[in-house]
Length: 82
Image (cartoon, rainbow, N blue to C red; front, top):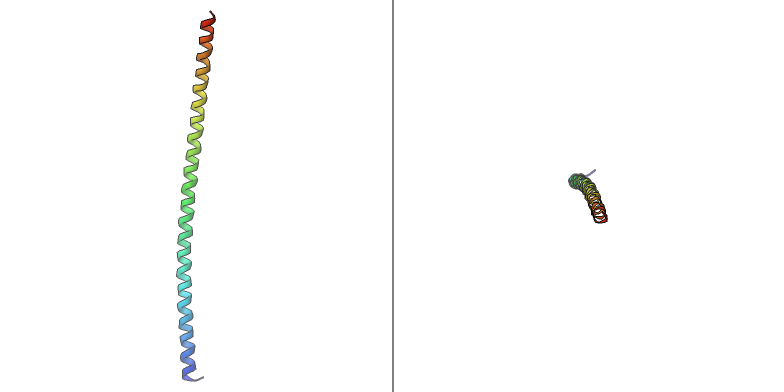
């Protein structure tokens, strides 16, 4: 193997090493992006669960108010009837 061939081979290995380092850096960047996305999804899930609980509480309050209004109307009807 000539010196020129060895230098070409070394240059090829160096280029491959640089390419592998770039691939690794890109992979690490992708992992960071995936983690950030997963965290955002978790935040959205927490917010949706909170909204669902708020809607349930509002529904319960609405049902209570509706029941009170029905009772009030019944009382008024009974009052008018007597």
